Structures are given as structure tokens and as C-alpha cells.
Length: 319
Length: 280
Picture (cartoon, each protein chain N blue to C red):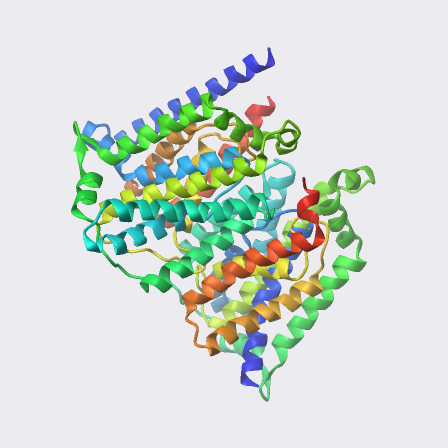
């Protein structure tokens, strides 16, 4: 009985999300005519693909009860490594190298968090700062290297008038939707997130799941980095004073996950919600932009939006 | 001596902002908004100090109290995770700071700067006195005052604290207000050092505050620690910056060192105290 009721409330939440997205899109189309054209909507998808894949990775980590602040810097490390390695003209080997880098960084995060029990916020913050250093020591900042023509063609191309990379995002989302729903791994990820102690007693190797999740997160971030490389051709990492490189996109990914309604404490939520969360976040930002409000308003309002969403969700849960 | 003076003055903002973080970490929380509150202080000061120094200091501290209260109420009454609450506060404040001060600049009176950076010979007297004052206040409040002991109780064993009649919500509320005030004071000192307002001046201190708190022996799991260790760590971090600079290590390599330092400090303290295993 209770499980049925929970299912219903979570479906209700999903419907509310979709309604909210439609409402926001209607407002956006009132503010800017031409928002609801096929061309523009695919453009919205295209522009948010990288954030979408990063948020997908973040969803997995948050579902397992963790948090990955280093996701943005892994993304940039992979982009820059790819750009430097692809100068030779080879596509496949550098791409694999980038994915390997992402997985290795994720592995280090995972081991430190699962085995050494360093709190995830602290470990991934430290990783973000270290990677920022690595990035600038190896490249000296500024733009370096260049993506190969094949990668550029893939990242900017369209299949049946649908952007390739957005297709990758959607396919990955569908893949992880089923991984989380059907496979034992997905079930364990959510179990570890909701009650690690019970998991340990019931024989689930909690550490292994956590390490795997952080590796997956690194791998997905590196994938997003590669797709971005093909888009940007020669990437310029942007450094915000104080915060590490990629801090902005890491925080945005957390925002998207929370807006989607995945529980920050882990265990409940899913990638389909994050998909909607990313779209809601990006449409809201574009409305603000079109209304003539600058980046500072976006930053400010995203703080307020996240808090209100969290409060509303926790109230809905209590009710 | 000039180096010593430099180390001491650059340690002051670290010490003040770590003061904030120490209180919050002992209460088993996180405060990600410390850097943004410090930036807010520089931004507001650089705009308001035209109309007088004292009123603007009062204004900055008032704003800090409000920020701390919002953080505290969000965490206690609304039950929002401290990480999310202070992260959102950081977002919000960064936006507001950029509206107040879109580009670094503004007016900080010379008298204010000279007072805070006052030197006898080459000895930075005011900076030294501020350090002593924070040390005394920090240790006294944490060790001797009722409020301080309640923070330990709440951080160490919330349930037992509740049963022994401690008002947890009120303690946490006071903790976050203290944190915001200390960060704002750090920001006011930064404003004197850089002689202007900067919407992002405080951001690097968030990271340093974690390193100093953990290096100083305050446990990430809450309930254990103190301000003395944090203060020592703040001096070490400040020295470390100078040493790396003297060795000619470029700023980006320093990032690698600092990141590795934070991870290893947090890992080692858990390893030595055995708290890491106990958590299982």
C-alpha cells in the first residue's frame, strides 16, 4: 500500500515538472516569438547537451548519497587533453585517452571517499582545485590544440535534422534510466544512497558501488568534455577567481538535479527528472537573458529557485 | 621582517574566515557562503564608506547577521541540508555582489586602511592585535561559554544534546550568525588590504577555511576540535603561500599543492582518529 502511494506521489511530481516546463516554455515564447519553433527547440537541446550529460553523471552520484564538485574540472581536463592530443590528427586514441583520464580521476575520488572516508564535499573540492592547477600548469591557460575534423563534424552535425550530440545525451539518459530501474547495479546505487548501513549488513559491497559511481561520473564528464571539444574546436578554459575551473558548470549540474526533484540525501530520484531539470533551468535562464537581466541576476535567482524547490519538495513529501 | 609582516597580515582574513568555518564544522555543518559573505563585506564597504566608516561597518555587520539568520532558519526550521542552504546563499550573494560592484574598485578611505595595516617599525601591530583578539574570543567562547559547549554537544551527539535540554535550533542559528559575522569581519580586513571592493575577493578563502579547520584538528565528523589549532593552521597556510612563492613555484602549481594538502589532511585525520572506520 505504502509503496503504491509513494509511486503515485512520485509520478505526480514528474507531471508537475512537465507542466512547469510547458508553462515556462509558453512564457518564453511570449517573451520571444519564435521560441517554440522546431529549429529553436533543437538548438536549446544542443546548447544544453554538455550540462545535460554532466547533470546525468551528478544524478548518479547524488543518488548514491554522494556529491561530485570536481565534475566540471574533469570535463575541462578531458577537453584540453583531447585538444592537445588531437593535434597529431588521430581521433580515436586521444578520445580513449580522455575517457581513461576521466575514469582514473573518478577512481581516485571514489577510493578516497569510499575507503579513506573523506567527506565527498571535501574530497571533490580538493580534486577540483588540484585539477585546476594541473590544467593551467600543462596548458598555461588560454586556447591550445585543436579538435580533429571528424570530431568537429560529429559534434556540430545533425542526423535527420536532429543534433548528433543531443542524441547522445538522450540515448545516455535512456540507457541510465533503464540501468537504474532494471539492473542490480542501479538498484544497489539507490540502496547505498538511502541506507548504507543496511546495505552493508545485507552484503552489498558499498565501497565498490561508490567507487564505480564516481568512476562513471568521471567517465561521463570526460564524454561531455569530448563532445564540447568538437563544438569549440579550440577550447578556452574560463577561470573564475577563487573557485576552480569548471566550478560554475558543476554547481549548475547540482542545481539541475535538485530542480528535477532527486533527493539530495540520496536514494530517490532519477535521470528522467534531471533531464527535465536541465531543460527547466536552461529555459528559465534564457527567459532572464531575454528579459535583459544579466548573469548576476541568473546567479542570484538560481540560488532562490533551488531553495524554493527544495522547500516545496520537502513540504510535499511531509504532506 | 617585511616577510613576517606580510605573513601576519595575509593570515588575518584566513584566521577570521576559518573562525567562522570552525564553529560551523564543530556543529556538524558546512558553511559554503563564508567566501561570498566576505566578498559582500568588501563590496558594501567600497560603496558605503564614502558616507562614513563606522556606519558602513555597522551596516556590513547588520547584513551579515541577517545572512547568518537566514542560513540558520533555513537549516533548522525548514530542514534544508546545510550544504544546499549555504550553497544557495553563496549563489545569491555572488549575484548581489556583482550588482553592487560589477567591477573591482570603489572607495576605501586611507585612514581606514592605515588603521588596519598600522605598523610599528615593520611590525604589523593592528593585524597582530586582531589575531590575538580572535584567538582569545574563539577559545574563550568555545571552551568557557555556554554557547560554545552547546555547539560541541550539538555537533558531537545531537540526540543526546536534545535530551539534555539543549535547544538545538537556537544553537545552530547562533552558530551560523557567528559564522557570517566572522566572515564579514574577514571581508572588512580584505577590503583594507586590497584598498577596494571586489565581488569575488572572498571566494578563495572558502577553500583555505576548510584546509585550516581540518589541519587544525577539528574533525570533519563534528563535535571535536577547537579554534587554537585552526589559528595555527591559518599561520601555516599563510607561510606556505610565501614559501611556495619564494621557491618560484607558479600560482597554478600552488593549486595542485593546496588541493593535495586538503585531501591528505582530511584523510590523515580520519585515519589517525579512527573515526573513518567507526562511521561504518
